[in-house]
Image (cartoon, rainbow, N blue to C red):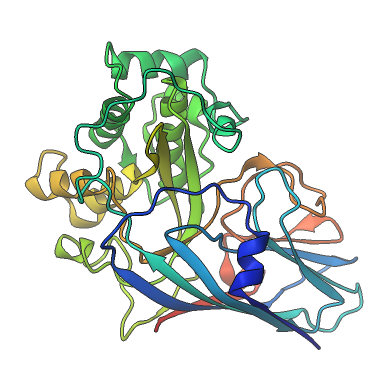
Length: 366
């Protein structure tokens, strides 16, 4: 039995996430997020068990107050040794382990991000000459699932037209997605976010990773740095609850089971300002949950809020796409890192099924 507690100061020192500019007058939330793992080894499987757990980042809108983990593992440690700096708890168990237990407890403070609502982007104009820093440049480049040429570039050019203002271009992309894409609840997990496939097939449907990856790819093709933010919902959406009691999280008595509440958001970068939040996918989720048309006033209100604003009943893990975890698993690269990932003797467990994998996630608002 081993146990490790990391204070905020140490965790901040480990974080390599790019920072956004501070937003004043924001609402704060504090959550306790507990993950219980009892990994289920399939019959016939043998060999060492390895588990990679995504951990939250630190930045100006999210602070990890504490983290502790305890279990009967052989070894366990935190690492950010991957090209995205995605914070990861890695643990292993011997082949003959009778059980594979792990409990991870986090306390995280989040802040609503509302630069658009606060008027911080009013009359935004890009600087005359834009030179992106090394922490931003990767989010202009393509990955295996986020192509920026071919059909993606064609769509981006058609959508933004002659517009040159990056903020307005991003808004045109968001509105195109709102008008043309739909949520498909039959998709496994959060979707695979294969943008080229989505646009080539013309099947403009999916879940959050699919829809927000389309935003990211189109933005990059339009020369706007953009990235997904993979995370999980932690509680009730107070502000968006004005429009929906079902679409944006519904914790009761401030406690919620979050086994299936993984969520991918997006953000884009404006030179001279910083990272700007956007969540085109949640507009589609709202429409499906509430049976609303695109032109419904409530849909348009949700769409307007989710361009340039986030309510922080949610915790972000990382921005990683098409990358290799550390230590390297048998399956590499992986598409994204919003769910825990595990292998037994090199064979992956089903991360999308909490019971089959063996995890339970509970959040409590403090």
